[in-house]
Image (cartoon, one colour):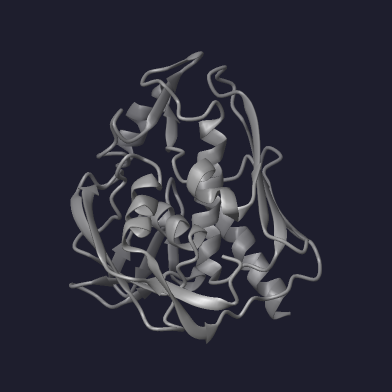
Length: 275
């Protein structure tokens, strides 16, 4: 991510899995792409959808992109993997409505990227400069902000009433992404499962692709990290912020945020950079 030049994949790779919310099995093939193409989705039944803020359509329990009548949901983990590993240009081909959840983390995506490798492209990256702090706030003290700094770093805090989760904080730099953030799995509370399913969500959810807690215990231990939930929130944040294209060097801080607040912040940051 620190290179001045754009990167793409060395070869294509393919993964197949079930969608967390739709329950629909889909196959994704991620291809190399020319410089300045960015990361974008291709679907046989619709137009290309750039992985960009302007195509965000919905942020309830996942990030969903839409162009015309074509939608692609739960894009955040794959986009976090690509952005976290410095892949600027990629053509993402899929045959379903949702990116597979796989094991609930970004590890299988990063493993696949490491296997095929990357290539350095001749065109430079255009990295914006953040000159002033940017802040958005939500309910219950939730916030996302960026503080200008010479290097990229991220911090996240969460606070749940369930003792199994509790209050957690984590800070990391991009060089630690593969080992410390990508393996962190999505999580939820057992008491929310029925209501989410009644709303049409998590049709493909299981103990194989999500951590589930009940008060002071996890139903499917062991955790990969003692603070795996907050690390996963950092993963979601990276995926959502990747929709900006390039992030200016800064310390990005989030607390009790959601996909919706991540995207609100990204739009505010975009405005600040354009202004």
